[in-house]
Length: 384
Image 1 (cartoon, rainbow, N blue to C red):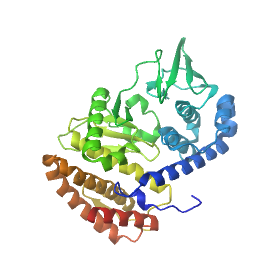
Image 2 (tube, one colour):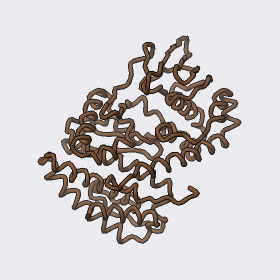
Image 3 (tube, rainbow, N blue to C red):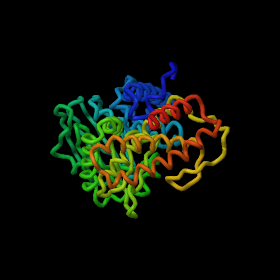
């Protein structure tokens, strides 16, 4: 970032307006990623698909937040920073994301069976080649391969896409205008989310959609400050298998998959809302990392995370402290609306665990000014 931005608004749902900073950071960072992707893969992309190369090459990289906040942008980042061999599939996924947002274009490209693409809420069939033609309001997609072909047409009406020719759409949780899509294992084909995908059980995705809808409704009605915090960044949830009676049952997210989390597919709605707040907080933390590192690498000690009961590096302690502090403020906001059984045990547990991690964070001398700013803002919000 060329101009310094304050990092403290990304520390807590209780800060006045985290949206303005998160939007500016995401848009600036995504423009940098798109430009770097084009520069690095210009010639290879032209050999792969000249039309696709033209689409991405002529794109104004200053995308709006809603377009940029998507795993497809994380895929471009992954191709640059982690795996150059992935640039073809990531370019296809990115182009489809652009068309979801109304960008016109016409192109064709070979696709591999391992890459399971989607358009909006519809999974696309497997094949050997994809052909796309769109004027921004109507999208025609043809999948060719192995003697089979699939022709699909999508029509945009207002802010939504509709189709009478595509396969069955993915389940969605709709709450307060926000649509949260349920991604099954087949949608999680990218290496960026391999750790998140391990725990997926997609046998009942519609159940998770219903439960996420109820959890979002609980946030909207009983903790509206934290509902705004969550709905701004949550786009996709993968259903995790539930292996114990402990609630929350576990959740996860990935730095290079904006908007995506994994969460336990259980019917304890308050603890599911807890998990949504927790993972949304991780996404804000990942946005904060775009402004610079939170530690300087000088502290190689491990510190105890009481929630995981594991020893972790100091930056992971700050990550956890940031997330659980927002869970605590969510519990406090929701307390006036009941939920006494859950909160009676959860709040003391959070306070004890945060106290342990806070001591570790104050001992370490490795936090950068950005890390210190995050820590101080979190402390102020939970202690005030």
